[in-house]
Image (cartoon, rainbow, N blue to C red; front, side):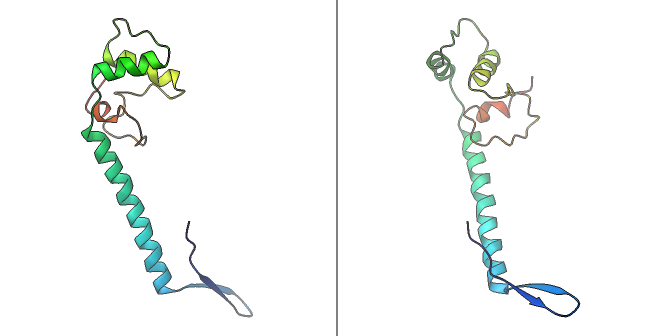
Length: 111
C-alpha cells in the first residue's frame, strides 16, 4: 500500500495537515484504478456461467453426492460445504462476493 506524504504545520492554537497536490492526485489515481479493477473482475464473473456438469464435479470434489438436486439446491449445498452463506439467487442483482464462481448465474436468477 502506498502512503501519502502529509505535512503537519503547528501554530500556537492549532495544527494543520497539508497534503501535497501531486500526492493527492496520485492517491486518487491509485484508488480509481482499484475501483476499475474490481468492476472488471465483476464483469468477467458475470460473463462466465458454470455448466451443470462443472457444478456436479465441484460438489463431488467436496464429498457431496449431487443426486437429483436442482441447480440452486446443489449450489447452496456447495456454498455451505465451503463455509459460505447459501446466497445463490438471493442477491437481487447486487453482490459483493466478486470472486464467487457462481456469480454469472446468480445475478440472473431470482429465488
